Amino acid sequence: MDRVTGIGGIFFKARDPRRLLSWYQRHLGLVPERDHDSVSFPWRSVDDTNSGYTVWAPFPEDTSYFDPSTKPFMVNFRVADLSAMLVLLREEGIEVDDRVEEYEFGRFGWIMDPEGNRIELWEPRSPPHED
Image 1 (cartoon, rainbow, N blue to C red):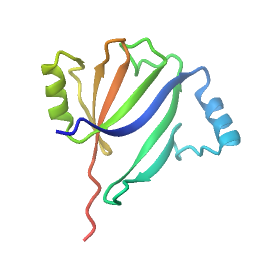
Image 2: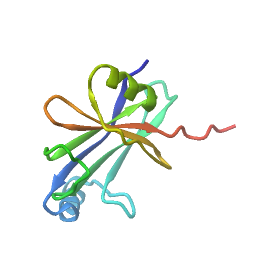
Image 3: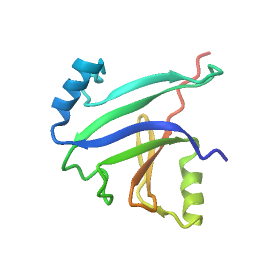
């Protein structure tokens, strides 16, 4: 079973996320998604059989989204089979959040590493096949 298939996103806490995002847009050319405070970087696999995106997003400094971690960042990793991955990690003694959330763009689960970093695992929805 594949474990992690790539980085889905980098998330970090900021005192003023919108101001910081404006700074990155002005000076580095990072253009936020419409109606979102994040930037998506699209990509295609080397063999051109798969495409996706990696998200970069500042979060408010007081966000509880990274809880129970007290760290100012969270990495999101893409996985092929979230359910199987969470079962395997539990069997290996990893702290796994009981919650799994599902959205139009995929399913999410969370674990903690030994240093207290919250890690988000994301199983993206498969894009519809073109006939």
